Image 1: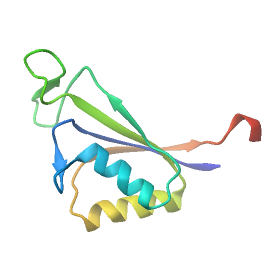
Image 2: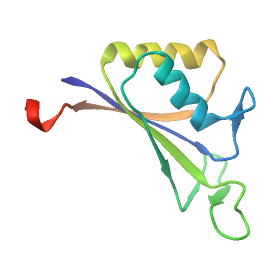
Image 3: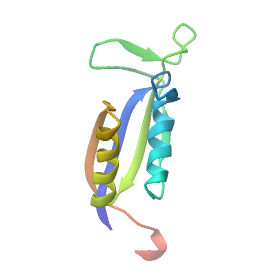
Length: 105
Protein backbone atom coordinates (compact mmCIF):
# COMPACT_ATOMS: atom_id res chain seq x y z
CA UNK A 1 0.00 0.00 0.00
CA UNK A 2 1.27 3.47 -0.78
CA UNK A 3 0.81 6.41 1.54
CA UNK A 4 2.73 8.56 3.99
CA UNK A 5 4.71 8.24 7.18
CA UNK A 6 3.76 11.29 9.22
CA UNK A 7 5.71 12.31 12.31
CA UNK A 8 4.54 14.99 14.73
CA UNK A 9 7.18 16.63 16.94
CA UNK A 10 6.23 18.11 20.31
CA UNK A 11 7.17 18.07 24.00
CA UNK A 12 5.90 15.78 26.72
CA UNK A 13 4.39 18.64 28.74
CA UNK A 14 2.50 20.31 25.86
CA UNK A 15 -1.26 19.85 26.16
CA UNK A 16 -4.42 20.29 24.13
CA UNK A 17 -7.81 20.27 25.88
CA UNK A 18 -6.02 19.35 29.14
CA UNK A 19 -4.56 16.18 27.58
CA UNK A 20 -0.89 15.70 26.63
CA UNK A 21 -0.77 16.67 22.93
CA UNK A 22 0.94 13.45 21.81
CA UNK A 23 -1.74 11.37 23.53
CA UNK A 24 -4.47 13.61 22.10
CA UNK A 25 -3.14 13.02 18.55
CA UNK A 26 -3.06 9.25 19.13
CA UNK A 27 -6.60 9.22 20.56
CA UNK A 28 -7.94 11.29 17.67
CA UNK A 29 -6.22 9.01 15.16
CA UNK A 30 -7.92 6.02 16.79
CA UNK A 31 -11.32 7.77 16.68
CA UNK A 32 -10.77 8.31 12.93
CA UNK A 33 -10.22 4.57 12.43
CA UNK A 34 -6.49 4.83 11.81
CA UNK A 35 -4.94 1.42 12.49
CA UNK A 36 -1.94 2.44 14.55
CA UNK A 37 0.31 5.13 15.96
CA UNK A 38 3.57 5.00 17.89
CA UNK A 39 4.85 7.41 20.53
CA UNK A 40 8.63 7.88 20.52
CA UNK A 41 10.50 9.53 23.39
CA UNK A 42 13.57 11.60 22.64
CA UNK A 43 16.62 12.12 24.84
CA UNK A 44 17.31 15.65 23.71
CA UNK A 45 16.48 18.12 20.98
CA UNK A 46 15.82 21.77 20.26
CA UNK A 47 12.85 23.46 18.72
CA UNK A 48 12.30 26.25 16.20
CA UNK A 49 12.86 28.74 19.02
CA UNK A 50 16.37 27.36 19.64
CA UNK A 51 15.44 26.20 23.15
CA UNK A 52 16.80 22.79 24.21
CA UNK A 53 14.44 20.08 25.45
CA UNK A 54 15.76 16.99 27.21
CA UNK A 55 14.96 14.30 29.74
CA UNK A 56 17.95 15.09 31.95
CA UNK A 57 17.67 15.76 35.66
CA UNK A 58 17.35 19.54 35.20
CA UNK A 59 14.76 19.50 32.42
CA UNK A 60 12.48 16.52 33.16
CA UNK A 61 9.28 18.46 32.49
CA UNK A 62 9.98 19.08 28.82
CA UNK A 63 11.48 16.06 26.99
CA UNK A 64 10.85 15.85 23.23
CA UNK A 65 8.36 13.29 21.90
CA UNK A 66 7.25 12.20 18.44
CA UNK A 67 4.07 10.53 17.22
CA UNK A 68 4.58 8.41 14.09
CA UNK A 69 1.83 7.05 11.84
CA UNK A 70 1.79 5.14 8.53
CA UNK A 71 -1.25 6.53 6.72
CA UNK A 72 -3.12 6.17 3.48
CA UNK A 73 -3.62 9.48 1.66
CA UNK A 74 -7.25 9.53 2.85
CA UNK A 75 -6.27 8.89 6.49
CA UNK A 76 -3.65 11.61 6.28
CA UNK A 77 -6.21 14.12 4.99
CA UNK A 78 -8.67 13.18 7.75
CA UNK A 79 -6.07 13.53 10.50
CA UNK A 80 -4.77 16.86 9.19
CA UNK A 81 -8.37 18.14 8.93
CA UNK A 82 -8.99 17.06 12.55
CA UNK A 83 -5.90 18.95 13.72
CA UNK A 84 -6.94 22.06 11.81
CA UNK A 85 -10.54 21.89 13.08
CA UNK A 86 -9.23 21.71 16.65
CA UNK A 87 -6.75 24.57 16.11
CA UNK A 88 -3.73 22.36 16.82
CA UNK A 89 -0.47 23.85 15.56
CA UNK A 90 2.31 21.26 15.67
CA UNK A 91 5.43 20.69 13.56
CA UNK A 92 5.30 17.59 11.33
CA UNK A 93 7.10 15.77 8.57
CA UNK A 94 5.36 13.78 5.84
CA UNK A 95 7.25 11.29 3.68
CA UNK A 96 5.90 9.08 0.89
CA UNK A 97 6.21 5.39 1.83
CA UNK A 98 5.07 1.93 0.88
CA UNK A 99 3.75 -0.07 3.82
CA UNK A 100 2.01 -3.32 4.67
CA UNK A 101 2.64 -6.66 6.34
CA UNK A 102 5.45 -9.00 5.31
CA UNK A 103 3.01 -11.88 4.90
CA UNK A 104 1.13 -9.84 2.29
CA UNK A 105 4.16 -8.66 0.30
